[in-house]
Length: 385
Image 1: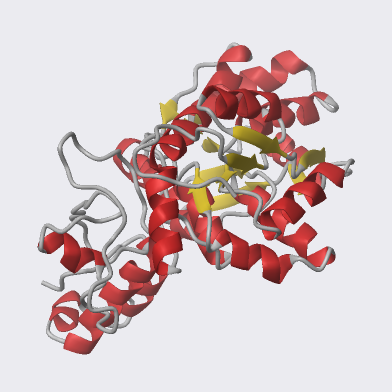
Image 2: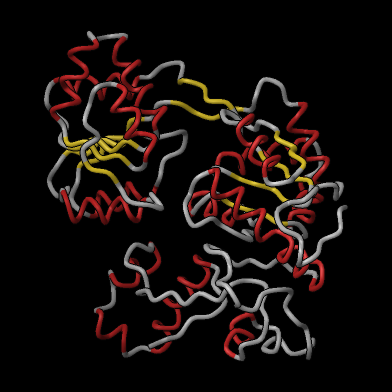
């Protein structure tokens, strides 16, 4: 495996694996541009449902004026929805019905899809385009209480989003449109998994959560899952954004960095800038960095492998305490000010049975809701007020 140094810039010869499918060529070119050796293996393909019963049933309600808000989660899903409805209704009538409802686009891809259809995108959700920002945007711009809200899904249902809508008093209409399957040619995917498991890869890039599921499934079926997991703990795992990061963590995999914007270009650039110091820290300490890196270090700031004096003392190795002591750390220290998390299922369950002031006066419950946030965000420390 190529040696790593803290002075080299970019990938500079490191082997970089990615599982992008539709934009596989673009991903390979980006890795090459930043000096890496690309190993891009498509991990999935989108399969329209054989019987779009839910979509067609939604179409009947849409044309009858029985939908108030339509949430579009993906661009290809928006286009697939129109194509599915066109099998039963004239295109002009479908577009007229879509124009009458309040449209909410989770990110830039559904915005582009609607514009290609000649429709105004309506309300757009800001980055990082997760269900948290989506619900907050709805609260601010078009409250959903008592309204019929359709959610165009993209292979799996977002339980947190659905629950959040129902808690706000919406009647939720799920509109599943397609599912994810393995690519028809599995040889490149198996080859990439074998290369990672065999220690021949330095950096792995994930651009969506479905890639995580398919990679682990393929590794499991080929008997390499345990070796793959062990290898991923030693190399750099880069996630395109919060949704992919959540999928990685739920699968028990590390997330070493995340770009400032959840797009493929910033992902590759950020990984090229930070991969060597992260590799050095992981190989020196034998542990995953497990820290979200959203921005490169500021000019003049200390960066480099974490020191490991007093190896027997966990507090001495704490990234948080190292930053407090102004010692060099493997990541840029970031202070994040936030509440316990009204969007978190665990917090809502406690609040459903405990008044807020009683919660504040109960040290055990205060610690519990704080720990939930720490575990979800995978930060290094939390302060209880």
